Each structure stands twice: as structure tokens, then as C-alpha cells.
Image (tube, rainbow, N blue to C red; front, side, top):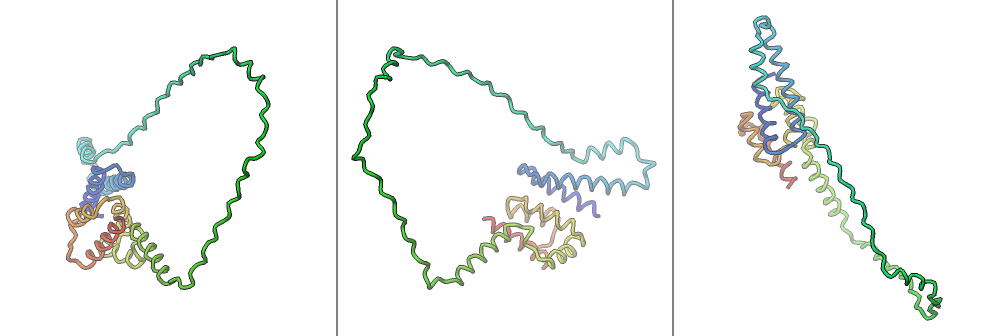
Length: 219
């Protein structure tokens, strides 16, 4: 695996985390850092005998360490005791027993039942074809807003082969990273500037077109 590409992917994750707190970007960043450590260990294995603790300390300082933020414990809220309410006119409580019996009102109006409103029958000339088109448009917009569903099986194999070094893992991680981004400009900056993709390349243009459709569907 190209170590430079790993470093660029780590930089892309850091850009997302610098803009906002995103759990998917944190998880992807930790995976990339572990992969970078593994690749570095494999690269320097032949010269392990000459590897000094000072060199290990320098490598650890170059790799950012991300520690999970501690969850603050909620402070217990003091419970206030209810204040006793004064009782006024205690002497008048005995008058409750002297209240005369109240006779029912015979001429009270009985509420009339509400008759159900008849619903109009569906029109016979309903344009079923237009309803079907609207439903298909809704389904299409939902698929475009979920970037993981924007690719056919052939697209996944073709983009993985031509843009990601025939690596399905890198393709999937890049799709998840785009889903975590907030704007089309952020995605273009990552692909064209960080990864150095050629915008005039036909395959790159098709992939970026799907990215643009994704953000347009999000509104």
C-alpha cells in the first residue's frame, strides 16, 4: 500500500474532524493510523536491529494520538421539600355537610351525535402514470442522498480498479468519508487537491458526477 496515500487519507479525516465532531471520521482516522503503523513496521523490519528507542519516540510524536473524551457525569440535583401551605377558615369546613342536595336539571339538552361526513369516491380519471413517476422520483432521490447506494456492482468494481488500485477496502472507506462531509466543495478539495486526481480523466469525471448528485439530493 502507498504510504503517501495513507497520509493523505489521514489528512482528509483530520480536515473533517477540524470542521466538526464526526464519529465516522474518528473511526476511519483510527483505522488509517493503525494501518500506517503496520505498514511502517513492515517497512522498517529489515533494519530492526539498528532501530533505536529514540527513532521509535520520533515516529510516535509524528502520529497524532486521539483519546476519547471522558463523558461528564451528571450532577445530582437537590430535591426541595414542599413547604406546608396554611389552611384558612378552618371553622367553615363544617358547613360542607350542610349543603342541600342539588336536584338534576331535567331540561338539559342531550348532545346530538356527530354524523360522519361522507368521503368522496376516488376520481375515475386519476392519472396513475403520473403517480408512478412521482414515486420513482422519490425513490431515486433517496438513493442519491445515500452515497453508499449510488453505485452499481459494475461501478464498484470499475472505480475500485481504476481509481483505488483495485482495492475494495479503499473504495468503501472513501465512500464513507464522502458521506461524512458537509459540502460538495469539501469533497472536490479532497479529491482534486489532497489526492491529486485529474478532473479531465473520464473515470474521475464520472465518479465526481456521482458525488455532485449526492450533495444535490441532500439540498
